[in-house]
Length: 162
Ligand SMILES: [Zn+2]
Image (cartoon, rainbow, N blue to C red; front, side, top):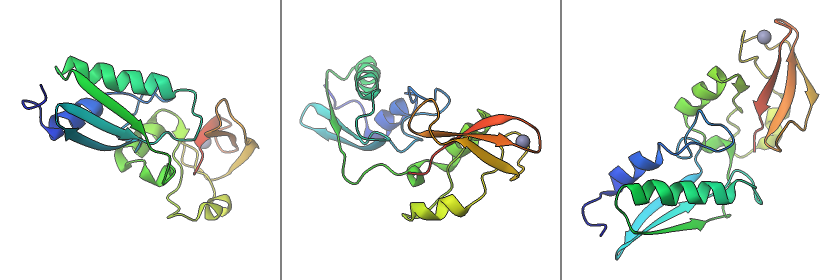
């Protein structure tokens, strides 16, 4: 039965499901969860992974299903929506602050023009200095680049703009 659970409650529950790659932010805050619908007795959750072929896809799908089952929802359908593709602009303001506190420089807002971001200096999440340089464009995951801060001599990662 879905009747007793509201869409708001479902969104709140989903906001407790953390991004498997970055456990300090939820999939809702990352803009991965796009839509929640109730159709007949089924809750349909649409999600857009941060990049196509994301290996965490099954993990995310299972986490959503488990969370909603815990709310007493028996029938959950998770749809993967690849169009429009996920963009880092969908990351909420709150999540950007959490990424930074986690030591991961948040991606700049680019309004659809990703090329702009290459010209922008990346601020160090530890000291806010923009005296930084990229050391490796391919961090531990495709979504991240590794930087080095010349000011505080710390390496850090940036969540790439997508
Ligand atoms: Zn620094």
